[in-house]
Image (cartoon, rainbow, N blue to C red; front, side, top):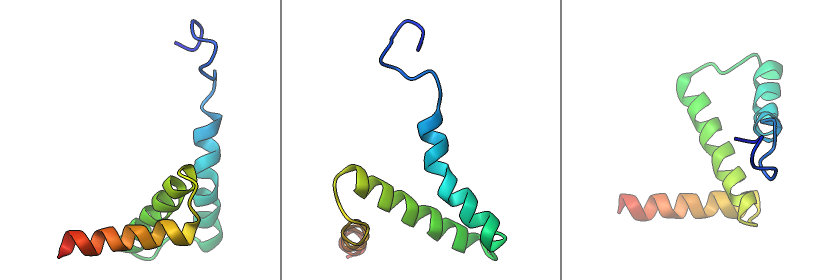
Length: 74
């Protein structure tokens, strides 16, 4: 598809760069000791990355996610 549409990048370099901090974290810390720890880390990374795409700071994105979760639980 990228051959016919010049605006589509020929590589998935953006995806690989997005994963790099998590891979480095895993290698430096020698992995997670529990499945829930890995899940929480993945959730936080996702929330922060989505917030960054929408122009929010990490703190604002996490705060909004926690507030939305509290509203959903109520």
